[in-house]
Image (tube, rainbow, N blue to C red; front, side, top):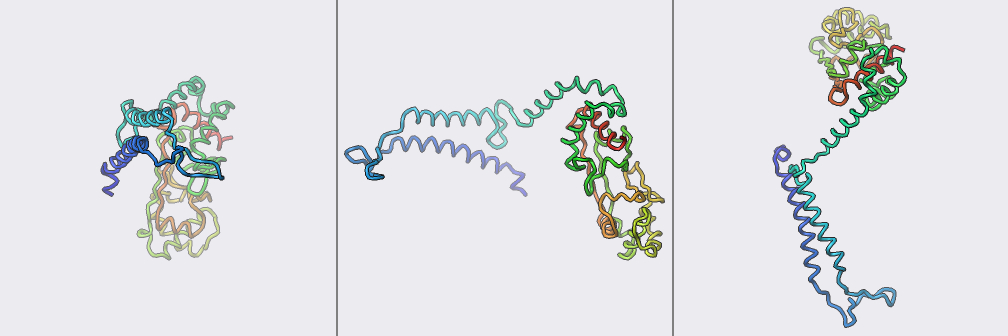
Length: 299
């Protein structure tokens, strides 16, 4: 790993870049002074199609000058802009700064549009057609990659249209989730549960909580083992929004359904991350997006 933490590679690439540019200039100078052997008629002796002969004329001066200008331009560019390893360039230009400036400009131009929505509660914003059109675009650009274009989610990514919320579905909780993100952690619990049979029995009991198809005899054996789960999911299995733990009684399975999926969860646990949007979106954009998402399950 030392190769990737030292400055060797940036020096190596910068060196190759400079050597390549200088080599082009040297090559032009050397070839310009070389004289090829020619016949008395100033041809090279190469003949095509019987009468097409290659002349040995020098390159036009304008072409040589353009080549030199190109080399000088490339050297000037590398002085002004980043291109030589970690050297930032005298102008201090970066693509990240350019992007940030363009985002700031765009936000400034759209600020008047968002201003009127900031004074409205999310429930009212959700009734505004213009706001919802904006919210739909914000959702498509920032949320659809995980929660799908129809907001019905994917395996491991919650459905935003069904009213089932791990941390709460009020506008305040949705805005809190969007702003700061969420970190979900289901720790591996196999050691606390017991043997593989105990784990399978517990899985059957979990299935029984939602009325899903299950083996009632094995579920009865697994009921006592549910105590290790109750600390997070509650003694009734309905979950705790303060912890973000899932409701096991509603027959909504975020990470897969059936004994196999539940056993895998008990054995391996699961870590889920909802990234914070406060660095990407303005407060006003989060407000409109909150209203849009809230409206999906409160039509």
